[in-house]
Image 1 (spheres, one colour):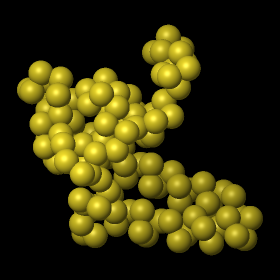
Image 2 (image 1 turned 180 degrees about the vertical axis):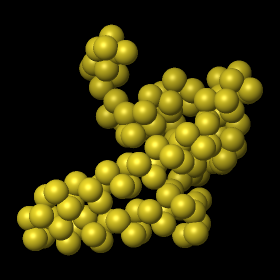
Image 3 (image 1 turned 135 degrees about the vertical axis):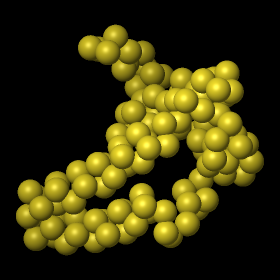
Image 4 (image 1 turned 45 degrees about the horizontal axis):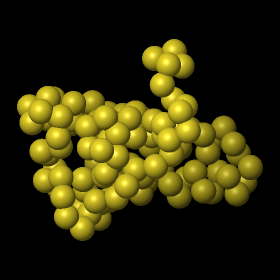
Length: 113
């Protein structure tokens, strides 16, 4: 999910996150999924129940993928000619530089994609 999100940001937003996490309310389904599963993952890690921890983390990733699929940001990118025009308006104090895709070091592209 992280790689998918970062690729969308780099391809369509110049690597800048157009909204901050604080812009999502506590009732947002993705925020709720993290709030529910993160304590379960932490407790499982503390017990060294790695299978349970992994299930909790994968549950968060599944919720994130469902959110991305439902939001379909690629359609918004196409409608506005490649620039983000969705939530957050593409500017302001909520922007954050996305890092860690491997693109900076010449990695990531051409490996089975």
